[in-house]
Length: 159
Image (cartoon, rainbow, N blue to C red; front, side, top):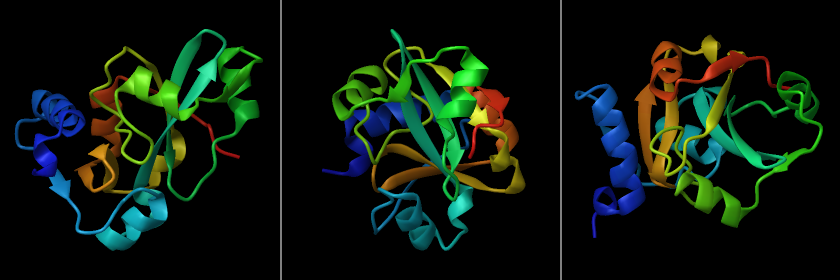
């Protein structure tokens, strides 16, 4: 079965096409499960890979989009949100909130509405690459379009 026929990939593709009908999902020969894997497959800098990290903030969830070469700061996240009790979401929570499994979490096409924060360090890159529902599927975008397609808020989120 083609990866493009998998439900999570179709969901990401639909969100992408609704935003820009000329955008397409790329299938990589090698996995993009980690930012380093994706950068290697795409021959780009690790920082140009958008990591989608889901955090549990009390009863809500926040998706943080972070450059592949950076780490999200929990302290900054707590200050920005004003919520003290924040931790990484577990694999089951990631699946139930986004509809994606870890390694293929896309910044778009979630099954639930999520608050999205985008780290400002992603602005360094002309081209950005984000997961599209499967570890071998990605899409290319830029910082301005990432802000628009996700309706995300830009913050300084990294350590």
